Length: 174
Image 1: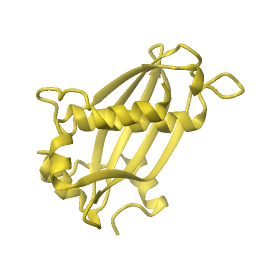
Image 2 (image 1 turned 90 degrees about the vertical axis):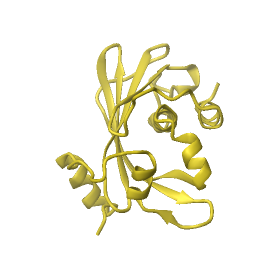
Image 3 (image 1 turned 60 degrees about the vertical axis):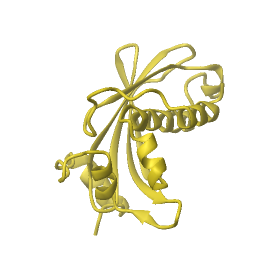
Image 4 (image 1 turned 90 degrees about the horizontal axis):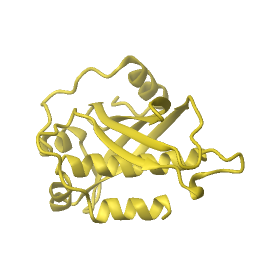
């Protein structure tokens, strides 16, 4: 199954919410490296990491029980910016664990960290600046999404590397 189909399934038929999981808690997605994930060098293609991250973020939304809440509002997530750091190759059949967590937000953007582990070793780390859009048009302020999902009123301080990255790419609130 291609990662795009996996994303469609994860979004259309989300997994069950995790009781007690809060907005700032980690969500874990487990998968394996498949033949279609590989490039000519027989390790995971860099674009596939982004597709795996899409699935893991959809799972975070499902784990939070947020799918029906967001659907009722007509809100949906989009990526405003992302970056990756690779530490170790992942190869065919390798088990992969992606830990996804919200690290903070500002008036415009929710910041998400996604860490890949393969065979109990760090393999990659992705940062995502996500926005929410409304089907009726326009952007939804990040604090409105956080409130809907029962998160804290104020964002925790962003890790310094995330804050620096957000400023450098001009995705941070001005």
